[in-house]
Image (cartoon, rainbow, N blue to C red; front, side, top):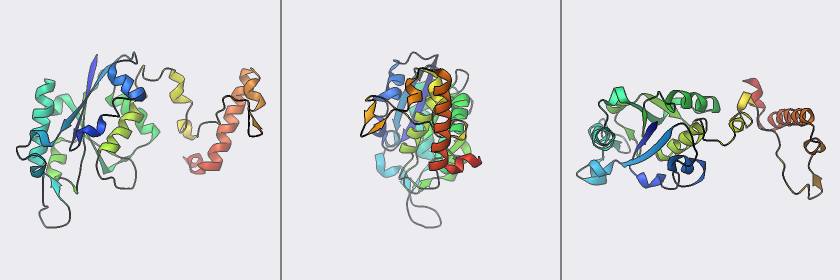
Length: 245
């Protein structure tokens, strides 16, 4: 089963390192042994425009600062850079288009899990991410083609590339076979609105601090109790707001 992930960007080379290293790089190279063969495609918006970068955006109607990415250019890129090479019959029937933007729901661990279930499964449509730049994207393109908006938080980035990488990095972890241990995703921070418990490795003693006795006891119940208590303490100390959720 092959699932394609397309990204439309003014600076497609942004994603070179993202798709090369770490767990995500291994996933796109097919080295993770999952149920789905993910293929990543970074498409240059300027590549399908006769004027290159210069003709992609224009000044806003009504005046104002910044430049707006043109809707006709984005549609052309979508058709020539995604639909035709991907062999799709219909944009709306075959693709789920995502746009990182302030109007979207704020990204959380829960939303990452939900996104993976909806959009990174065998039955889901192929994904297309639209990376905005400059002042923004013409509203008509957004209304006609974007299916989902996602916001990383209440702040502004210079473009959608970083947001797209964050969304994919956090959501793809929940796809079958991506993480070596299935429990990894359920024993980390934000699962059940708690931070992860304290972690220890060798050496046993470091700067007069030793690994807690419970962790070297070999007693499963004692280890579990320590981790639950540690998680509770760390959450209350650093993120008490999580306890209210």
